[in-house]
View 1 (spheres, rainbow, N blue to C red):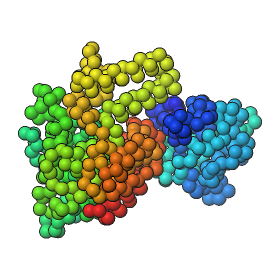
View 2: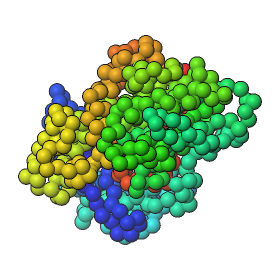
View 3: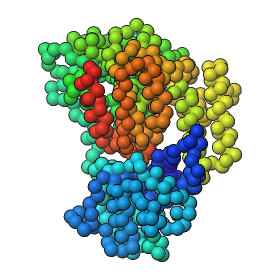
View 4: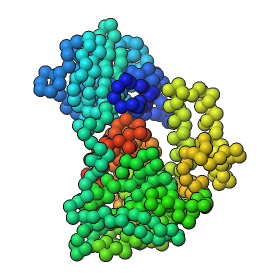
Length: 508
């Protein structure tokens, strides 16, 4: 469940959208009472920001060392709330005793508790403002990401609001949160050829050429032609997802290759510059095969211990490569799918667009009539693309709805033919596969990833399915689900790092 965007004074010049776990369903329908809780959320219920989304390891008590809440009505309620979150679930009687009736009329205590279940590890950092009916304080998630919260109470001293704003990091930069390369390892610029195009990449390996052979991983970047070898894109140059993964791997003794796909980074459009629309699925499959072949041929690589990593959309390319559907290539021993696209591509586009339209209606940016029109336009676009491979008449590439692709439509329509779960079922039996999802991934949730997990299980893969907590789509510790945060200097997931180390030690 999600709250509308809320604007706050001061701090970072942006708004924050907080998302909540979706309510449980029965036969595809929300349980009774869900609509009331949705309205409850939309009313910006008390613990709007982080207090409902961040939640509860051990919290410093105001009675002990550390920051203290004032003994004002608002301070007393803030202290109670932090302590209550640490002992989730909060008893219904306690919720009724501390929340304003105007809010509780829109959602039950059980629904409030259900929304809190997924959230943990909230700590009090400081108390910065102490007014009788409001208290401003800063909390941290897992000791990292910080939020400023302004909790207010009504005339009876009951919680009636607690909007939050993310606080910008104070002493870090995008570079400072990237895991360091292992001592003695180097990140070597390399090139290789694929389909008449020179592909530029980074080969991460031990600096000592006599160090012997070791396992190696191919890292295929996400999203069509717009993302480079590090998973960075125009306008978002500091996501650095794959640089972080490559450096993690170096610490585990695993060499890696990541590369700029056609249309991105140093590779650019090359011979396709005049006609980028001619680049299709086969073009990008050729790149993946050539990259794996190049990696396997390196002197320090044990070609019997190769892995392929797919993040987001590149998960389908990793599966096509590992299953042999992309063409003859060196044998892959293990597959890592990090927040991958789990359904047909255009199906995911439609689901994401519908969710976005719903958010805009809920936030008052669209009327119901405008929403219906947009949903119908997306549906027409999808049907036409699948039937003809072209956009509907009057819709131009790069404009309006079509601008969301930022890539050749030929590749879009061709990759859409594959259901990743069906491809996963064709992997060689007993292939080790790491699959991740996160409760804070605002792009692809765990419920969707379950579809892919089922395909992997059907195909007898040795599946390690890891559910991450509080990790965004680009593998950073970020509970906001605000897509702009992927470019922030937030730490990469320690939980994922541990899962990768265990998976590779066991399977590569």
